[in-house]
Length: 179
Length: 259
Image 1 (cartoon, one colour):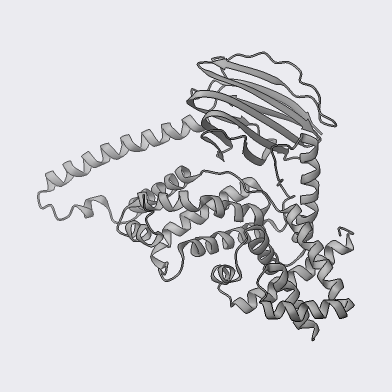
Image 2 (tube, rainbow over the protein chains, first blue to last red; image 1 turned 120 degrees about the horizontal axis):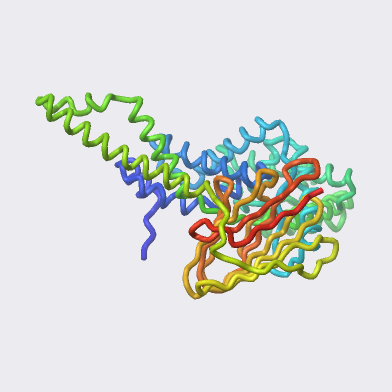
């Protein structure tokens, strides 16, 4: 079965078919949630942020420019929502994530979480502008061009900020002897 | 080669976006420039650290919740926008206009009531005894405190629920085996926050998601779900996790004191 394109779904929503928006939510809820989760470091906050991003997306759908990708557009809304949440809290909530594998025992899991927390504590110390680049490039695995679309900055700027972000992160981790 | 150029090429190499020609130039630089070699090695190590600490993808399904919020907002906007009588101003017969508006109000009221009842069903979880099981100690994993084991065997659904806890963390593993589709809710008290959700050993359909302080699992076949909770508070606190069947009766209830 052919998948209906995002732009057609958006058009349907604008004509009054709310069900088409649910298709878009179902399609992108996971990456949007994961972006929010990786930015806020908290599952419940990420849930609120991601849901709020989709509700705002619906309200602002008329402003969506079909020349761009819906994914980049909703991603940008979620990113802004995440940054607002983080800035409202004025802190990074202790990092709440782990990489679970089938073979993980509770003890292995605990150690993985500790490693992850060290990285995220270092990330929380660099400016948001730079942290975003690490999250989008390394965690979300977006290309330079996709990051450029989401952040609305040039590819060259994406590169220079990303390289600076890595430099800052490296220095912080070296200070803490994490290499 | 300028330092800024070297930094750019090393980063492009790490990102896999370097061209063949640039790579040749960088390879030469790395052979002769110890500063470039040091920078390259540090960046490689950084990549490994980031990869090791990369947060895992989380499972989620909040589409229903989002659509409910949108519908609620739309309804609120209509309520504060043009009056419903004005919307039917094209009807010249005043009595007919009132009759239509009254009828719509009645239908709307019924729909809202249904929505409220639906929401309260999702949040007002109560314990019960439709399912029963035997709580017994499980073998204690290194460093983790013993939790409980429940065997579920009812209505074709077979399962086991294990919990472990250490310091401020609870690890709950739910194994379900069922030829029929199933759906269960997991409630937890306010001292806990959800840390991670995952489906493991997914043989057939299986989903796990969270919203409104309740986690829901559903699926068919032989599946394992993992939930990790963390203590919200800095202090010693009581934790309670309840698992409910579709009719909101408790399948499993477990209490821990977290440090």
